[in-house]
Amino acid sequence: KNEVEQSPQNLTAQEGEFITINCSYSVGISALHWLQQHPGGGIVSLFMLSSGKKKHGRLIATINIQEKHSSLHITASHPRDSAVYICAVRKMQGGSEKLVFGKGTKLTVNP
Amino acid sequence: NAGVMQNPRHLVRRRGQEARLRCSPMKGHSHVYWYRQLPEEGLKFMVYLQKENIIDESGMPKERFSAEFPKEGPSILRIQQVVRGDSAAYFCASSPSGGDTEAFFGQGTRLTVV
Image 1 (cartoon, chains in turn red, cyan):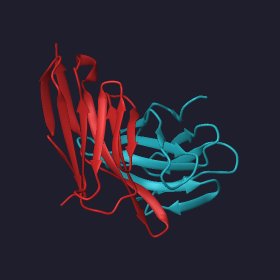
Image 2 (image 1 turned 60 degrees about the vertical axis):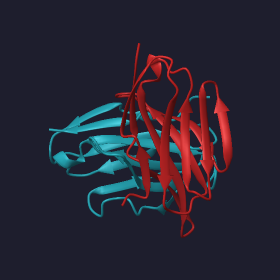
Image 3 (image 1 turned 180 degrees about the vertical axis):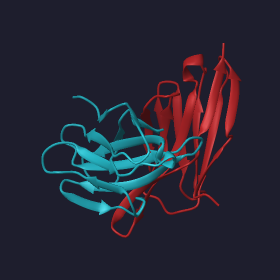
Image 4 (image 1 turned 120 degrees about the horizontal axis):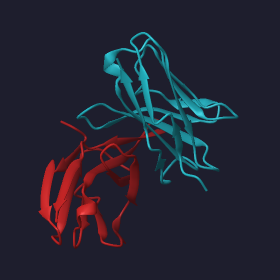
């Protein structure tokens, strides 16, 4: 079983819809990241969370440490939001740290 | 303040050649991470470096792969005697320090082995 699981794997929405992407993890973490990757493009960090909730524009990220679960919400979705959204947890291990990634959720927003 | 710069963006190598991927971290960042994204797979950690030190290379293949982050200049990921299975996108990220600081990613280098 992967240490980081995302759902759904693929998501298609109509412009204006409210989007939720979920991430569950099974290891102890110090922080959780939400990343965005456009096709053939680089990776953009959207949020880094260790507790609670963060908001940036139309994006909202929440994390529940006890339940080991995080959600990324997009309000009033737009075709330009079409991308792969990746959840990654920062795992501290033996004095080092590394990011462990989910497989990503491919979001397509149709006009 | 330029972001994390990776070059080249695209690299084509024949089987058996060497591939050198460069990563210049953001100004003031002394921690560099390399990740690999195989086609249709998620990102995987490869190596974590600080200036002149390899902190964690547990994700690096045991053979043909090496990484360095010298006192001066960019971090280099080197792949010797490339094989088709090395074809992937290689991403670098940097952060100002370890721990819970945000890491910033580069645009990636897409390596194709023919």
